[in-house]
Image 1 (cartoon, rainbow, N blue to C red):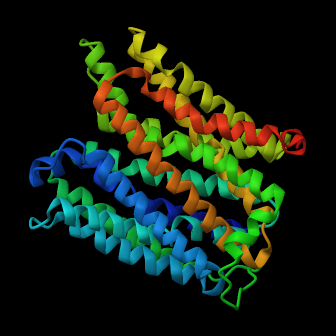
Image 2 (image 1 turned 180 degrees about the horizontal axis):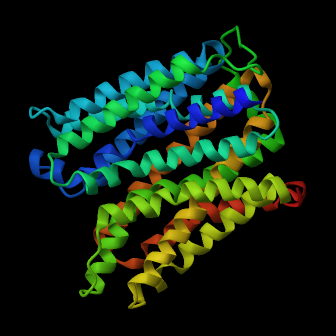
Length: 393
């Protein structure tokens, strides 16, 4: 058991280090715009490029059952190394908009071998207490996602290239650490044959399908919220001229506090049930979307930041819970593929959400745009509520 705890710590640290690749370009966006003469819509394009890459990567990983047929630790290390290499290439002065988008796309492709594979490794070590384990794991994803914003604040006196390089080094170390210290887990059941139909077969399970659609609703909101955190802060500052925010530092705290939400949610789930906790977390984040316009009107920065911190907690708290339900309802030999295909579809949903929200933001510049984020949670809640067994457990 002690060995398992050590393994969980290593997986969490590695996940944290490697997922920092995700929003690396967002943290240095202003520098990229200035250095490469990009248009102001670079935020959604660079973010979407990573998402597109992740979608293609997870689709290929799922169809080929990579995480089930090969050693997950080796896959994790290989993908972390290549992701770090493509991230490093952002610093080259010869880059154009096309090459920057391509590099972010390729980074996204190899993130497909980091986040879902990390969850697969956790399921290979933990049968009991899987929910708590994934809570810590998704918490690491949240911290890794937020880290570039903290580096931007801490290294503001240095070149933006140092931030990018720091993230690449961190990702490489994370991959190496997991490869060296985490062998294949005791509950791993290797999938031998290539079976493309697995991606379809897993959805025949009703419980799997319910959890998956709840996850898709959650994803509609999550990454758009994360991508727009700096814009939320800037918008409030523009409305209330006397307010001056440290955008990178506050962005870090608003996103990273989600790691606490994951841990709290996983512990609550151990008491009242995973399904019920996921439902209430999705409901709370939906409520935040719906009341968000009101907080822009409040002339009190502390109240506004407190609201964003709460939103940052509940927006991600259900993610490890849905992943737990998905893993538990999939056959052992197909867990890696099941988690990966659900990730693939979930991140495809984020593309539409980010692009739609960005487009409306550009043409209207209204604080009511964040009501759009409630669409996903509302649909997810409807799907979950239609199954009485789901809401009671």
